[in-house]
Amino acid sequence: MILYQKANSSVSYNNDIRVYENFEYIPHLHRDFELVYVLSGEVRAFVEEREFTLREGEMLLVLSNLIHSYVCESANRAAVHVFSADNVPSFARAVSGKYCEYPVFRCDPDVADYYKRCCIEKEERSPYALKSYLYAVCAQFTAKCSIAERAEEKSDILHRMLAFVSEHFEENVTLSRMASELGYEAHYLSRVFSRAVGINIKNYINLYRVDMAKNLLVSTNRSVTDIALACGFQSIRNFNRVFLSETGVTPQDYRKNSV
Image 1 (cartoon, rainbow, N blue to C red):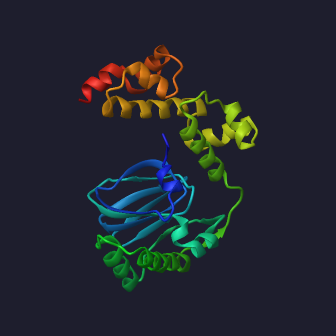
Image 2 (tube, one colour):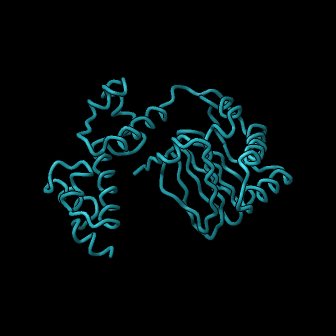
Image 3 (cartoon, rainbow, N blue to C red):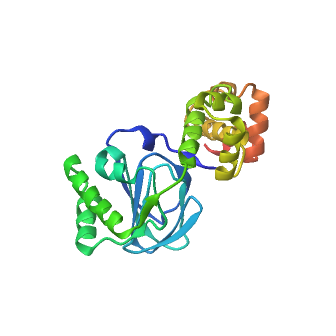
């Protein structure tokens, strides 16, 4: 399942910097840029249909709206910096609609040290200073990585479809309704989604609703029926059937086993 990260798609001047041990993450998508800096070990990265091995000292810059994920096969430590385009507007305009075949690069030592000291190791960061650090790294990216024009942005369409699900999953979401509201032909959206995600849109909506329900089952005392309706299921019977099919347990057992 591909996770649509709404928080990394709509927050102004977003700068989320975290350091992970044994870093890995499921396939996900968001509008903001994502910079990964490997501090030790190796990280396997996947961007759309391409695979990269990031080694100590190397960086990966994931441009907007691309499906990406990470796998940890041995001990590693990595800094992940998700930042919105308004932090680096000139760079964002320069790469808008562009494509990078190999987005892995190694900053010059002085730039890497500058970024590490001021962005990763420093707890309180001035928003003005952050812009200068980001521009320094982005300048290295454009100098060391080949960037070219790309064809129609299917990832933009996919982003809009995933956003639509996240905003309307409590309602009666259908492919025909989505196509009408997004302004595309239903069969075209179906092909784009299935090829990118690997499942059809109906199955994805069910998975999304189940994920929302799992969180509510663990974090609240709301009744199972209330949770089912809040997550867009039309009946408790349908909710129990889909939940059992996707998780292997009933909602009641999931809540009991998560206590």
